[in-house]
Image (tube, rainbow, N blue to C red):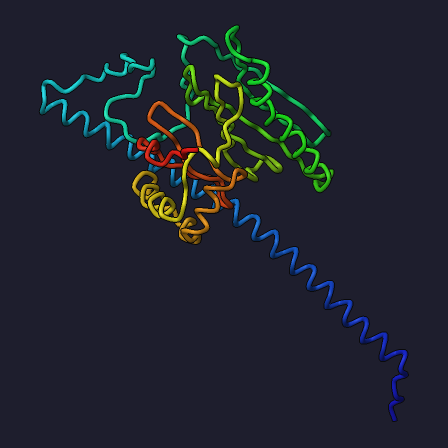
Length: 304
């Protein structure tokens, strides 16, 4: 005859089972979290590579069309048109309608000049950051205020690195890199961007673009979200332009027009900067970032 279990033994078994279930759930949660994080990284790599291929294909197609037109039309400009800048001192290229690759557009005929410097920091043995940033010089401008605006991003990154130090383990490493580009400059406006990337254990963890626009006359930063009038109609048009310029981006299909409006009107996600071709507009989002060229940006400018 089997003895009956005591109430204490029954309670111990019940709590032991509950504890085991909790441990299993925690382990499952950690496994799912790690899977989602790795999956997100892979998706980011795929999307970035896809966009880059599409942009390269577009450039090659434009070159082929230019070559064919040159053969058929003797009056068509030769390839050396790139040697002749436009009225603003910029070299736009012939027939370009989209801004496919971020690059510097430095001018040397203005009342101020641009130089580049590097800021490095190693907050901890397994944490490091390196930021390349522009420095403005000139006697006719408020260079101190302008450089303070530009270097504010360095302060933001340093604060971010402090937050990273709170969760990163001693076995992991994190490196933050930022490359800056002066995308447009004249006597009235200075536009620049920071192309930023976080590397966790040597692999890309996050990428985004930070855009800075400065009124050179007042020496004050422009509020990015107030530069254009953006609503749902703008977002619908943005989606169409994006597909024409960048090809289909699968991850964007998960965002509604209202979601895109929110991303385009939030200063923390909005990307907007001037270029010799017009204005580049886009946003940072979960899978990376995307921009579209607006040569007709003046139609959408906010009027106060």
